[in-house]
Amino acid sequence: MSESHKYTINLGSNKLKTDHQYLRYEVQSYEKSEIRKLTAYILNHYTKQNISVSKYRKLKPFEFNWTDEKRGQIKGSLSFNDIFEHIIGSGTFDNSIFNLPRLESPILDSSIDVGLPQPLLSRDGKRETAKLNLPLTLGDNFPISPKLDREGFATSNLQKYVTQNIVNLHKLLVQKSHLACSIRNEWFNNFRMMINECVSAIDMQLHKIYLLAEYRGHELGLSFDQEALGVRHGRRVTDKFNWIVKITGKPLDDARDEVAGFCKIKDLRNHLNHFDPPCFCCTLEDVRNWLNIIPDIGRLLWKIREKFNAQLSAPIVELIMIPKVEFVPLNIADDRPISNEGIGYNTSIWQNA
Image (cartoon, rainbow, N blue to C red; front, top):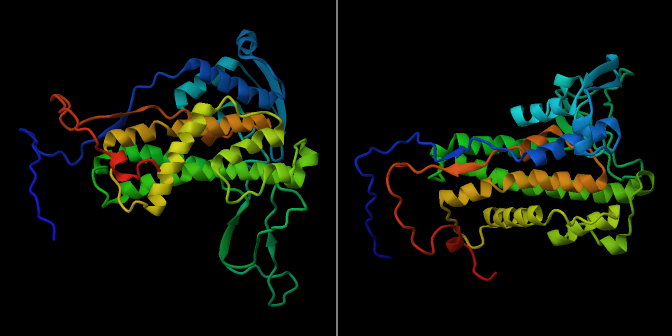
C-alpha cells in the first residue's frame, strides 16, 4: 500500500465559493469580415446568385418572393446589412424575422421525425399494423428504409440536432463551470457528450456526402469512384477529408486550421471514450482551450458545405458565433502562483503515441 500524503490548499482569507464561475464568455468582438462572408454566403443560397460582399454592401434593399406550401406566395424586402446586424446581435440566424424560408440544406439538413404512442393499425379493420416508411434524401436505390408500426420513434437525419446540441452543451458548461473542479457531477458528463458530438457532427456530414455521391452522384453532379475513395469504415479521418476533392473536385485546402482543431478534439474524444491510458487530468485552462476550438467545428462544417455548394443551417451559424471563453480564477485579485512544469492534460496521455 502506498504511503498517504497530506496536502494543504491555501485559500487565503476567503472562504471557498461553491458558486464561483470559473469559465465565462468574453465580451465578444466578432471578426466582422468573417460575419460579412457568412452573410453573403447565406444570401447567395437564398437568391441563387454569386454576389461578393463588396457588391452586396453597395446594393439597396431588394425584393424577394417565394412560395410556402401552407401560406402561399410570400413577398418581402431585405438588405445585406439587415442580415449582418441580425447575426452579430443575436449570434444566430432566425429566418422568421425576415419572412424567409428555413435556413437549411434540403439534402444535408432536412429531417422527418415521427413518434408513435401506440401501434399503427391498418384501415381495413383487421388486427394488422400498417408500416410507416421514413423517406430519406439518399435516393430510391439506397438500401435502407426505416420503418415503424408501433410504439417508438424514428428520424431521417440528426445533423441539425447534433449541431444544436454542441451549442447547448457549450453554453451549459460555461454557465455551470462552478461544478468543473469535480468529475462527480453532470458537468463532466456534459463535457464528454459535447466532445463526442463534435466528432459526430463532422463524421455525419462526411458520410452523408459520400453516400449522396454513391447513390445520387449523377443527379447531383458529384463524382463517385469507390476505388479512389475507398470504403467508408476503418479509415483515418484525414482520408475522409480527402473525399471532398474526389467527390466535388474542390480541395479542402482552406480549412487547415479547422481540420487541425478537429483532430485535437477527435484525439480527446478517443481518450474520453476508451480511457487508454486509464486516467484523466486537466486544468481549467486546458478546458478553456478546448472550448475555444469548438467554433472551428462550425467553420469546418461551413467550408465542407461550400465545396458541396450547400446552404448552412441555423445551428451551424450559432456554432460559428460562440464567443471566446476565458478562465476566471477563484481569487482573481491575487497574484497567480507560477505553474509547475509537467501538469495538466499532457501528463495523463501516452507520450510520443
